[in-house]
Image 1: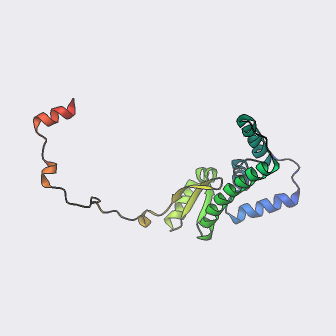
Image 2: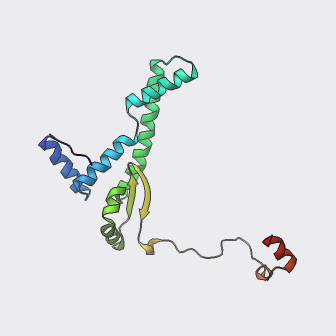
Image 3: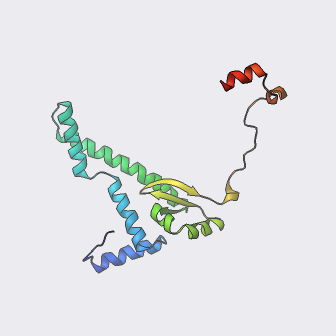
Length: 165
């Protein structure tokens, strides 16, 4: 459990507005945002990891090395954010894992009405809820050629015995 004390009223109000805009409780919204925050390494963690790698590999860490490590981490974060953002542009409702766990019935009701719901862990989509009818029906017969009728015949006793041993 996490409690935030002495939060300025304007910050509290903005968080409530953002949570309401995403049809989430304030608690679920803040939990999702905190998950996003800790999913990626901080600048201090990136620098510490680069220094440790430099010590381990026996070379001096330059300012350029640190900036390169930071830029690589930022690029990784940006790729994840773009993937997450593309879901929002398609008007897909995206919710956190925690929200999905506590509001599954409501999400299923939305899906029954034809909406699509993506469940994300931080910025990374991990599952998609779609109406059952929206799934493509697959036709049996994925083999490109015909299978002879003899394929379904019983195996000869000696071959069956070889498989059983």
